[in-house]
Image (cartoon, rainbow, N blue to C red; front, side, top):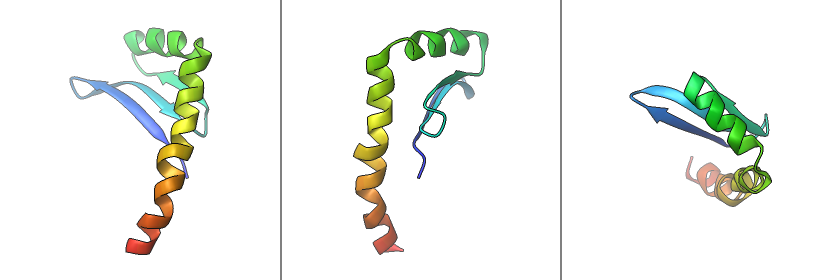
Amino acid sequence: IEYIRSSYYNKLELTRFSSSVGKFVGFTEYGVKFAAAWNNDASILSAMKAQKEAYCLNNIQIDYNNI
């Protein structure tokens, strides 16, 4: 299971957090600046990592049962 959170502006992906990578990645000049700032903040990174457990792991059994 992988948690991915992306930020878009004008249909262009600026940043992405992936639980398998464990950090934000920027795809534009502006996105790289945001990703660097967010990666330097331990509280933001730990909150994003916790989202995998809070959202994905709690709902996976419900999704599998509905299939």
